[in-house]
Length: 349
Image (cartoon, rainbow, N blue to C red):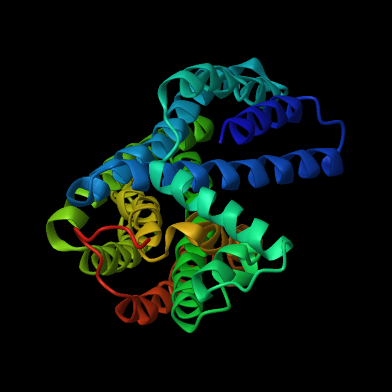
């Protein structure tokens, strides 16, 4: 986790010095790789350190950092965009700041006892395998390459694939909808002879402010009512938020309120991954399974803004595109009922 934070902070800062489109794209790709690593390790550590009855609250509060970061970036852009054409470079330079957190993390956050115990068992199993000893079924699972282990047992494989489908829906819709919300609000502001850049910043702040509440609230609701019903409720409300923002609301004041509502559920539903995924897999593959489910869909979901942009250009503007992209939520609604409820249960060993 420490290495991931350092890496994405440095890569973000270096993005400010990109000299062409390809250099910028490569640096942003590397940032994405590092952020995916940091989120997974952070989620696994929090899940393994917090008590069973409050685990949802712990990961929900952790997930709010995502929204707080976006919100602070929106506030920073409000003050930085007047700099001019190079304002975006200043924004990326600010991305170096998280590297300072590694000093505190190293001193203050312990390694998980659950992981250390399984890691010792894994080392012992690997040593027995090297010595030619016959391994038990449990030792064989520990000695396997962890990615291969995700698909070796039917139960784990089934949960990985269901989680993948749900994650794909969450991530694809997030990038396909949220990426276009600020420019949509900016376009409405321009029609009213108001500053489009200013209102784009307002929209981003409202959206991310709502997301912070959504992230945190998910954990409290999930501990009270269960992972499955709260996830399904968030997905349904996320789907409902899309026509509220892009079809039914036209007043700029109300659309900022609608943007906050959208953020609470389109973005806030990400907490289901931090909350539910670590509880579905044994310690030996917990981080790997969570990483696969969280990160693999991102290799597909990056097309969301491109597809929604194409829909905007060819099929009637922002509204049609956003509603079309939101239909991907039905994949999540179809998959969620087949995963087990894990509220209050000990993590699988």
